[in-house]
Length: 208
Length: 312
Image (cartoon, rainbow over all chains, first blue to last red; front, side, top):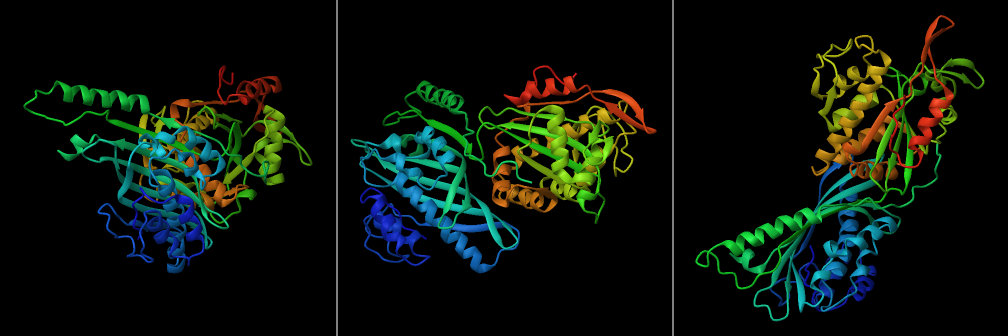
């Protein structure tokens, strides 16, 4: 579970801090630190920002035999990669224009594709915003295991955000839904594909 | 057998942004048209919904040789004959795909064995020998080879099925549990296997069987595309493929390929079978293929994975 509000600190700092933490903590702390939260555990991100939410990563199905330890490792590893992506792509310190760095965990081919889809896969449409907060972050994992080795996984994601635009009375909600395709590497999971829908809804309509 | 050591990354995007934006504009226009008393939005902004899809497997055209062995339950697939031989090209840049079938009765000179039907090459020298003969015939080097037997095929279809398959004929496959109807059928693994094997009941014998096999391949692609959003669907299919296919792809690359295949549309797939002249050799029915014709088909598809002139 991760508390995520992204309109303050920068992504690199959190990534560096996260890299030194125990296996299960980076997912939690990376985004909490990015959000400027001072907490140092799963509950640390609640803070004083009403927009905080937790990133939920759960293995819901697996083709092949998967032990409990491996399940936890998958959730942790995928959580690390997804949280780093969400932070760099949507949160971070606004106004900002460094969205292209969002695809560090993508394979080179997927990153090249993502760069062309940058308006869908990041918060670049809100580059002039005062801030963006996550209101829902969910990833349901389906994995493939063959002979005890994890081969790959699909993360079915539901990411909801709110962007506070300058001079706007209400924050503008937007969402990213769909599938993110991943394979494990020696050090981290990488993204080799995506099939997502981006929905930017006018605030007035969303509130009605 | 590895013909290509490692897949190169590729982009295969599918975007429907224009359509979605057009739909969104209609929504905005509809809102504008609503009387003031009904809606009082504080401000307007464009409703924008867009999709993006890309799967990184490889770039350019990748050629797969897909072999269906007639090895029965419990037999090694390499001990059987290759009764289905399909050279499949996927262009990861354009989304085009093609399947060129080499009839199993094609009469060839098998190195170290002598003249025989091409389907005997699987038993004589494994998938590599079949790949060499296909390369010699068509002039295209397969990058990867998949070989499956009856069990593996049935398991794979059942893991994703039922598969929607279009048949040109109404007939009863000799080993099939149910009759096949002309038009759309939904087949489980056993039904699909019987459909793919049936030959005697069909007007053009092996050529109609090839047509059915290619229709089945399209049906599998159709099913993969409709099922891909279901949780665990691609993973179940990939596991069945890992266990049911003998291939030189690593498990990770096979999984990536399974995901990447869903970016191809059935409407972009062209298929045909190399034709030849029926003959009798050593008392057996065989097919003499004109090498110039086979080469011409290879040249047709080599650079764009699209059949412009068919196989005839």
